[in-house]
Image (cartoon, rainbow, N blue to C red; front, side, top):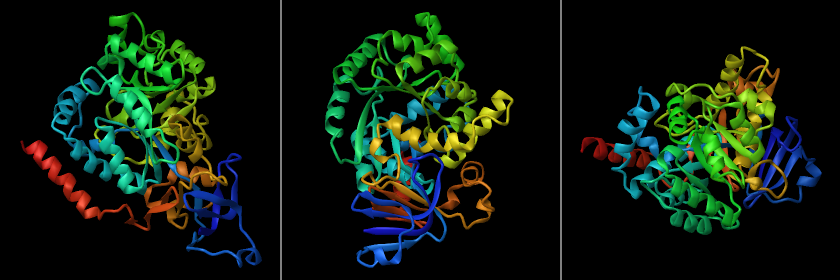
Amino acid sequence: MIRIYNGKVLTLENGMKFLDGEVWVEDSRIAYAGEKVSGQYLSGLQWERSIDARGGLIMPGFKNAHTHSAMTFLRSHADDLPLLQWLNKQVFPWEAKLTPEDIYHLSKLAVMEYLTSGITANFDMYLTPDTIAQASRDCGFRTVLCGAMNDFSQSVEQMEEWYQRYNQPGSLISFQLGFHAEYTTSRENLRCVAALSSKYKAPVYTHSSEGQPEVLSCRERTGMTPTAYLDSLDLFQHGGGCFHCVHMETEDLEILKKRGVFVITNPASNLKLASGIAPVRQMMDMGIPLAIGTDGPASNNCLDMFREMFLVTGLSKYRENDASVTDADEVLKMATLGGAAAMGLADCDTLSEGKQADLILIDVNQPNMRPFHNLTKNLVYSGSKQNVRLAMVAGNILYEDGEFFIGEEPERIYTKAEEITERIFGS
């Protein structure tokens, strides 16, 4: 067993209750998480390793509920364009040059960045799920694959195969049905996705209402908003999730609430692409479940959950002209519990006995985390990647004190990423 002791523990089982305590990990699961244990009881236990938290915070890892990991090759290359121009001129043409092996190596680079941000699971929508899955497995990282079907890549038949193959008990990899967006997917293909969802009683995920032009175009073609159009095709009969949801009407939000559809908000990407600010407070007031995603490193460009959390609350306050809305506690829940629920990771949400040991250790002995007026607010308003001391997935430490333990040396991953980008942009 591994013991992490002398820390503050946030299990998230009962709200934002911080304990002076410790966490024990046996194999891939939590054996104990709670108040510190007396020396007499500890004397009979054998430890593979004991880690002194030095007063740091032990908590569930963040869940990145929307991303495109392998777009690391476009970081700081596809910038400063409106959304649709960005997609059509700087994303789709270059993505066409990627090989499955490229996506494998580029995904590993993203995994490294996730770990430095305290992210222990991601919801990855991209072109070649098999090589993404292999990259995550090789790193020991937890990934939920999301179908990215559209009229140009992937198919309903492939999605069904992936759904059956990857949803196996005890695996680091799982799969959810999904398609890119209504504007890249024909009505016929959308009906096929709905039929697959009905067959497996499975949720469906997609980009939706990210930019105003997208919404206007959908109205011109269908007479409906993207949300209403997708609902009319029975795509949300078993729930699911919509990424972005910036330009939403009240009727759209009522549909999402009725269907139990998650909204995964992506504030940094929406800001950078000038897409707008999602009505997060209205969604919360209506009881719509929320999670947070970074989106991909081409549109963000940083895979940093701390920055996303700050922007969720900061932009919501600005949008509503009310500094009291969207409290830090609510945002921290979105980044952890909300993400786990949206991704179907019920076994990885809290630090509870028997659940998966997906956790992080936050170093609070740094200037940006003092004093301790309110630890939750410190995390959301002033926390940063520099505070992540350790990240563990399924009981394995993958990142600790600046070092990675993912089966490959960082310099090799960096080198491969540079070779890929030189080949693609040099051709």
